[in-house]
Length: 325
Length: 284
Ligand SMILES: Nc1ncnc2c1ncn2[C@@H]1O[C@H](COP(=O)(O)OP(=O)(O)O)[C@@H](O)[C@H]1O
Ligand SMILES: [Mg+2]
Image 1 (cartoon, each protein chain N blue to C red):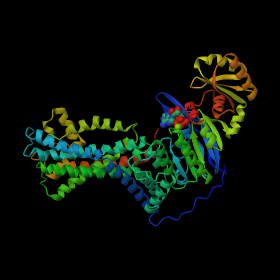
Image 2 (cartoon, rainbow over the protein chains, first blue to last red; image 1 turned 135 degrees about the vertical axis):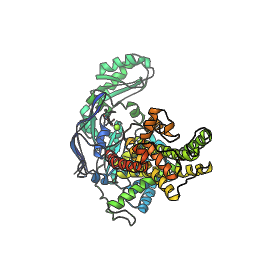
Image 3 (cartoon, chains in turn red, yellow; image 1 turned 60 degrees about the horizontal axis):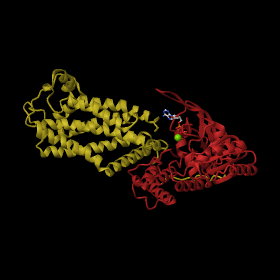
Image 4 (cartoon, each protein chain N blue to C red; image 1 turned 90 degrees about the horizontal axis):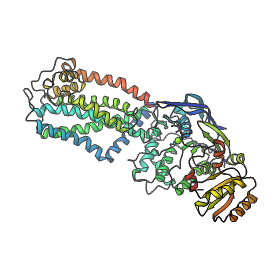
């Protein structure tokens, strides 16, 4: 059963510098109890999509529904069944963690006593017991994110919207957040999350919609998307950056398509037909040219490769994706 | 990792949970007011500024200019106080705009707007909290005024009416500022606008000197200035006008009526405007 549904959403922002088609006919559907990852670079229209679905903005045209409730006709009804955590943690700095949760509980009309009890419950579930009585001001980025997510869960919503839930977090906090999200999914929550991190979508999402310029340009499971790109890639890391030109020529000769240089400058990769024999040939050629290597190997394509193939530009989040790769 | 959904447990409302549109509206308004007041208490420097600035004005004007500014048939300190009150509630109300802009920028408005609460409650909670702030600074100013010799002379009832009038105006003006707060891009815009608009407005009025002592064109502005009407109304109710005759303009001849009418019009126009605008705001 489709739980989150959007059909041909359009939204154009007009400013002095011209028109921006934030959404240019975006459609998506998310079956109940699954996680959909909206994957795309900065400015692709991810946040705009989420804001239409969680009732913050109205599209110029198109239809959308959440849990069978029309977003435009009954925004109040939608708000009762969703939890939303925006791109930037929206918590009151001056309140303590507990007070933030209590405020949200009261605004869900739980009643003072139940709001307090629920706040306590969530603080414990999110490992924030020690910090619960401290003002959010002093929280780390990871703790803020957790409180923000906890605020979205006060009403145990069946549908959850998470806009870049781990952007700006250190790798450890990010993995902690992933565990929390997977726990919620296991309990049956339907999740729409956006991310710029390809391996985040890979890890969390059952289905991925790749978004660029306000439309979905590809859709499927991570494996389906990777299969579209196909083949293997040979990756080498040089000891000396000065050898990069020679090494690039070697890779170009034995691979197909463009040779990519990573931001570090010493790591290069190229698509190949057959992994192992190609790697052997590349290594032999590099040895002959007396180029010392720090590392070498083959790998399956990542979503980064998918993105590059689909859009012709990379995801813009390569640095971060290398961090936890 | 598709799992079957556990149904959302059906909850009957807790005993103390608000039920029905009126109860939930009151509860939402109170919750947001509570949050704003808590924020105020946790930031004593905000409260301090709201209170210290008027005290400074009372002391500086009464002690520095007290000897050199003449009021026909009256004492300058007595005359001055209504002006300071007017100025304080005017500037105090800009706080509503600043805080709304701040909440918008920090994404809190987005949080509120995704909750099934009454959206108007966010604005109600804001203006309520600022009414409390304005009341506190009024009380402190009055005590300071009493220390430097200010006395009301028309009886307690008239005095209380004057206080109520100042607060009514401040509450209505808070709604204007709250609307501005959700229309601007950053809280600083509110502060700059307040400085650029409200400062001249208070100084080209009868707040600190008799309007008749201002240069010709400025005197004309002062006698039509709504700030003058507010100050004149409070001054009359406090019995602090000396023998200065009110100028021959409608706001000066009927200041109380002007302030009450003006406040009602402000509320009638800006409450619905702010509430409907609020339904479409979201942070960038
Ligand atoms: N309120 C707004 N006013 C003008 N332009 C906007 C506004 N919100 C978003 N945009 C523009 O719309 C495009 C899509 O933005 P967004 O949905 O935030 O992208 P993403 O979340 O994928 O980074 C961007 O070009 C952005 O600059
Ligand atoms: Mg975004």
